[in-house]
Image 1 (cartoon, rainbow, N blue to C red):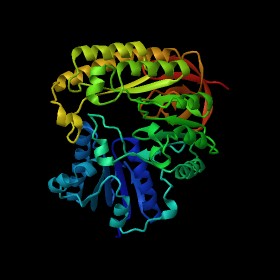
Image 2: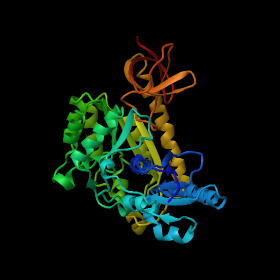
Image 3: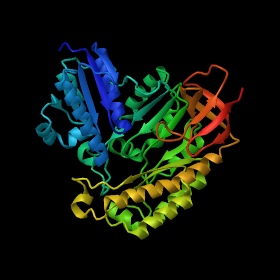
Image 4: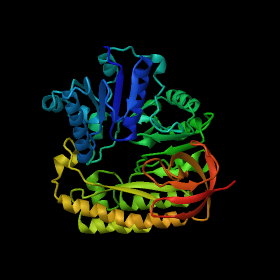
Length: 431
């Protein structure tokens, strides 16, 4: 195949981004010019799709159709689709959008490489063409999920939980560190299950300890820890290892036992409260991020008010919310009617964010006057923009500072916080 420019469009979560980065390395090693999310067209477009909820599916379809039009106009030569949506609805998509040259599943990396007529470089299996700033990278420690949440279709197209061998992750982390990566963001559908399939026990604490010994890695951040049977020893790892950020992303989804039971979360209101209280007691400085789901079948007004009260009481440092999406191939789809109108779901989600915005403003105000270690991500206009250990890229707040000195992106600086707004902090460099 003589085409030499590949543009990969990544939609959805950071796990998809890691997949794209691995593929990009293979293409680049075979002489392709590799682009990512580039506005310019290329010989070959690969759309790495998301199929989690309705909005994500619609975005993926819209993106595919944009490139179908580009192909018909002669702007691109080949169009391929991979990822979650393609894995979930492959046969339907092949019938509905025949203009796509080929659809692949989520894990058909070898087939994609074969389709493009290139040789798989086994010596580059752990290497990645970073699309993030060079000082941080996502590290996917597992795929799939053994949980059976009623609202979630992800296990249907990712399969059972499958941990990446620890030695492979250490090799990948070392390669990333040699590229200049200072912050590893550990990601998985269910972080705390790491190791159960390979080692017959949870190995996340050991993995973190070993990763923290990789030369050059200064921050390790934890995303997507399931609350049910949460391994409390992980709190000791966060407390005692200075390289582990005071940050934990734990999607709770709800607080009402009624809703949690319908969601099949296998945890009660009291258990959830006890866990949050334990985390706050053990790690009072920790930034606790969570996600809530509103409008699930059977959620009453009383349930929703209970959720609002819980959010006001706990004052999560970071919080996101999704309106329920009635997804086929899920337990909820088969067992429950989608009995809450869309406008009610959206109104509840907006109310949650109104409450959280006030909390976020108070959380930010408490940082004023403190000195924070800040990792600089970029420059925008007159500001250097970075993050504290309490903030993850793209989803959390940032620190904005001006300096007459030439500061280096990807370096850590001590910054005194001078003011705040609803989402961000403003500071001055401490010389």
